[in-house]
Each structure stands twice: as C-alpha cells, then as structure tokens.
Length: 426
Image 1 (cartoon, rainbow, N blue to C red):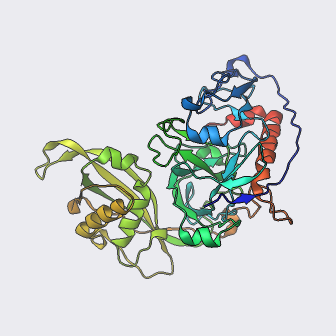
Image 2: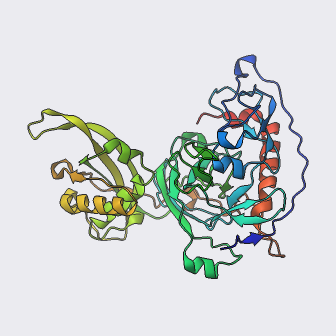
C-alpha cells in the first residue's frame, strides 16, 4: 500500500533560553542523551550541546527515522541529579508523534489518595519528512510507551506501560485513508501516583523501539538490538490525583503466589500487567477488567508444602479490586478459582505471544476486608478538562504534526524561566 500522506501545519518559532545562576553544588552534568548521537554524550549544567546523526549502522532505526539529523539539547543550570536527561531544545528536532490522542482529558477512577487508575486511547504514529514536509504513517518499531511526565516532558516516577504496535488491517487500509483513527491503541494505567506530581503531571504517549524489535526493514543497516524512546510525545491535559473525591467505592486488596516456568522473563514482559488484568477478571464472577487496578508482582523463593525451600523462584502477585459502592458484589479469597486463573494466564499469555506454564497456589490466595473510599465530591480533588499539549486540528484539514515544534519551544522557554523547577525529586 502506498504511504498515506498528510500536509502538516507549519510552525515558525524563535526560542530564547534564560538561565539563572544557582549554587555551585547543584551544577551537575546531565546524563547521556538516550540513543546514539555524536557531540552530546556529556552536557554540563547550564550548557547546550548539538547532537549529530551517527552512522546508519550505529543507531536504532527509530532514532534515525524520528529525530532530525542535528538537534540541540539543554541541561538545566541548577541541575542537582546526575540522572537528569538533557531536554531537547531545537524546534523540529522530533519528527514523529501519534496522530491523535482521544483521551485528552483523563479522570481518576481510583478515589484513594496517592493511587490512580485511568485509561488512554490514541492513533497511529506519524512521521514528518524534513525534505518534503509531508507526514506518513510510520510504525517500524514494536511498542508505544506511556509515561507520567511533568510539564517539561521529564519522566516522573519509575513505572511505564508498553503497548504493542498493531499491524494495519485490510479494513483500516480501505477506510482509514488520510484519516487518523484515534482509538487504534489503548492502555489501562494504574498504581501509586508519584509524590513529585503534587502540582500535577500528565501522561505522555511516545514511540518506543525495544531490543527485541522484529519488524525493522532496515535490519543489517540500522541497529535493531538497541532501545530507543522518542524523547517527546503527545501529552494529556494535567492529571490530578482525586484524593478522596469522586464516586464512592469499596476497595479490596488480593494476593496470590504462582509457579511460573520463566518468572523473571514473564515479570519483565511488557504484556505482564495486561495479561494478569485480563486473566484475573476472567477468573472472578461479576468482575471486569476496569475493576482490577494497581497490579504489582515480586519474585519470592519457592517452598514445598512442608515449608522447605526449593530451588528456583515464583511470583507473588498483588492487586486491588475497585467495586462501586452501589454494587451488591461480595468477594472473598474463594471468589478466585486457582485452577481457572492458572488456565486463563496461560491462555492470555499465549495470545500475547508468551509461552509459559503456570500453577497458582490456591492456599496462598488472600483477600482483604472491604474498605470504603471516595465519595468526598469533586472538591476533594479533580482533573482538568483542558486540551492536551498539542495543536488543535486546523480548518484546512492539516494534521497535528506541526504542533511538536511548538511543544518543544514552549517547554524550553519554561525551562529557561525556572530551570530548577524541573529538578524536583522523581
């Protein structure tokens, strides 16, 4: 199929970055910029460096296709962390972004303070050519990554979510044409809200190439066995933890242990959380996937029935169940059928391309007593309904692609005005 082309918005900008001197003790150099680039492996605090395109066989295909040949990065003057990643400061440096974010305003479905649960939907990735100024659908990578970020696009917290790229169906090829389908992808995200986001953070969706990418046509020309995340994606409006507001719910926490043929690999899989959410929901009467949140797991030592330690490890999985306060649903540890859960995990994992054997230990199933949460009203915490940080559709049918330059300039202008503000603890 011939590439779908779209005429992007043209944005011309001039950026001035102002820096304010800070204590010498805070003047630490930034971490290495992700990927492989020449000239920006080390950026001093307050300095700007130019990253130059490496040789074709020295970098990931996603980096070579989605970053400009040369672009500037900036390290905040008052940087106090060696892990701070330099910020992109050149307009037009990033050539790729998803065509549209459906869920521009996101609502917290978990009313508990410091916990969140929501879902995101978005369309396929677009790449804009610097030569032709045309945009085409480009998905020669294997995942989209969802991150929690501050207003500068810097990651907050450690947790991320990966959603696999889908092959375009025949129906999409026929009906999509030059249109962006904003619900091609979706992700359910939940967990502990980062403490550094008290002033509000956003969710960002951006292309991600893992070391295991299988669909890179440049294999042998571009490096495929290298991670690369496009440094700036599309962001939602600011998301605020509800902190007791919203609809009243009942919360119960459950856990179980399971023997897995390859526990470390399964836990590290980008499909782990979605596999467990689907499998758990399908194993409990009256429970759907939206009610299963905050899934986490740890490796534990395997033991025998006589409590004798065995060789190997197994996984302990913990999750929360959110039940509407108006529901008559009552759940206990016996609400989970261990045999059915084991079968569902194997089946769902296989559908996600993972071959695994599983045995859930029925004796390890634990369910906490119900606890009430929420019902405090929107005044206890609410989410903004502002537009996401991307340009709106133009009346001439132009795409959002041109908005990326504007994002970068706005971010760097803000960073220059208050460089130390971006250095809050992650």
